[in-house]
Length: 194
Ligand code: IMP
Image 1 (tube, rainbow, N blue to C red):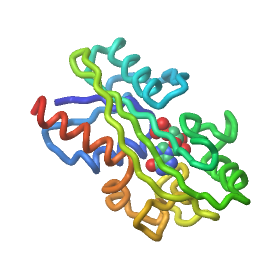
Image 2 (cartoon, rainbow, N blue to C red; image 1 turned 60 degrees about the horizontal axis):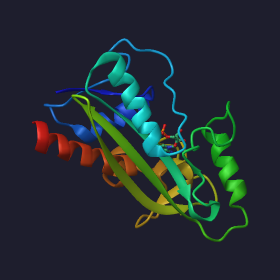
Image 3 (cartoon, helix red, strand yellow; image 1 turned 30 degrees about the vertical axis):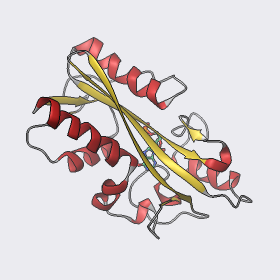
């Protein structure tokens, strides 16, 4: 089965291929179907954004596809940056700017509890299904490690004493928000379609 992953993020395509590792499912990128450009994601929930992106591509190309949206939800910041994780420090910000902003906001805060939450919207033959993955952990006081992307250097998952950015991709995928949501997606595809 061909499935288009609605993302322009090469890291994610890499991660998902690594997780799926199933010859019956072929992941295509937006480039593979000839789409380039931006897709709106202007909802105020992860569910809304994932659904908006998947529906956009399904309606345009009528191909089976899925899209995801992820947020870092920090308890002491009332769930921020949440759905605004990508551009938390402003429109032209990079990963470092976002991490610096979070570290500054948490400077004098003892409660470091946080979680990553991913929502995947899958559309097959016009029918949509949502999958959720959560990993609980804590925000570190400084950056640690250089692997991964986004907030990985300042997030330490529960049960581990290293950050996501110090883990190999395989190790991260086994426990990560996206790994969990993707495994739910794969189980569903295997049970329902393969
Ligand atoms: P997206 O919706 O998956 O594009 O994620 C939004 C933002 O959340 C990204 O720009 C990253 O800053 C952050 N993010 C998503 N997934 C991860 C992850 O696995 N590790 C660290 N940060 C992430």
